[in-house]
Length: 314
Image (spheres, rainbow, N blue to C red):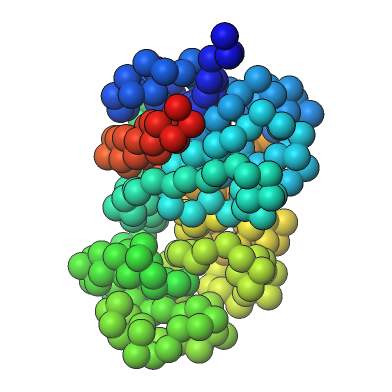
């Protein structure tokens, strides 16, 4: 009798994967194990995954590079939530005959979190809430967004929606990215600014680019130094697009006024990391896509992909 097919669900932090979809098409034919913790060490990850035939990864929480994939001879399927996962070595998977699947998703939750961070950072909501909880009252003076400049770095599916909401707030919406044209900016409801003017003009700069070789470190020390000392930086895209060391220095020295961050170079963010405690940072734990509708889509589509694979292998 052949051993049962085993499926691992990684990084199910809230322990909701099995409640977010009907898993019966899979659980009726395979053993499913969910892991609510995160394993960063490569050797520990390989030891965890060695017994499994299929792995479901949540976005890019656990990278699967060649050095890990080549040490998992039993692995035959990698199901990923989202339609693209840059942390999976696709060439290594293809060479070993491992199928990689994706899912649908929703960008609305990330757009909404972007605005939650903009508003929380502009109005000092975390400190005000903490003061109320501690028995105090007002501790700061917030800033109005009306007639301020919203600088949108990248006006794709997410950035264009963020731009439209900025206009609804009465903001002057400007945009720039390496390949952006004035015509494309206008289509997104923004005015195109050249790079130097873009960074120098933005009162709120929000990042909406894909991470790649051209975008890695795109917002560095020079760009941060060009920004207004009253400016806020928001990043719900990918941490490495902003030079983290340069950002920390800019926040510590007051070169910019604050940051709202949902993404970081290393995730989960190390416990002693300064971005956890800097008073001008509003930090959230990469929850842009962590919402009810995206999760239902992710797990529904992932279950369907795993079930189709089970059909094919008999």
